[in-house]
Image 1 (cartoon, rainbow, N blue to C red):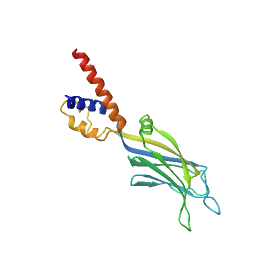
Image 2 (tube, rainbow, N blue to C red):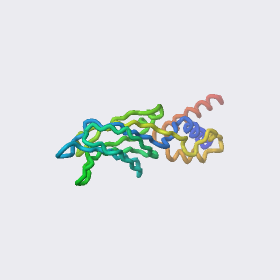
Image 3 (cartoon, helix red, strand yellow):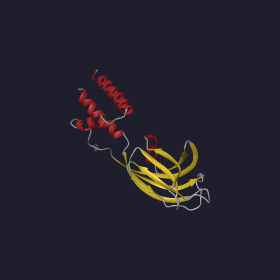
Image 4 (cartoon, helix red, strand yellow):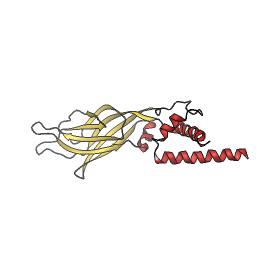
Length: 191
């Protein structure tokens, strides 16, 4: 009895859950108020972006602390987008100007589902403000793995149970709430 309700309800919850982020498109638009790392002249900044093991780098903008790039990159999905701004040096090794992160959490993903999102990333170096980088983010979303429009049939509980193991605490709580409501409704209908 419980397995039947559980599998149907899990599938129903999955149908209501938003699709997963398949790929992330990032445009590095501009930097603002970057901190100068050069003793002589101005910095020559470039940005290094990383999601998981994927890395992309912008071109170097010479002699500016407010660079404009408008360069686009694509990543597979991951939990975090790392942003580093470096100063290109001809003689010595490049200097880190600042770094920041963008958590690809459900809050941001919900905004991405509505279209492109502009996001200012605050940069820090040794705990101090190091300027900001403006990114324009866009996502490509795909259905959750193992989820098909007809996955709610009574005999399809194996896919539902497998996805149940990957549910967050909040998703499990919502599933339990919906299950209790469905059972109560069916018991009321039987009376």
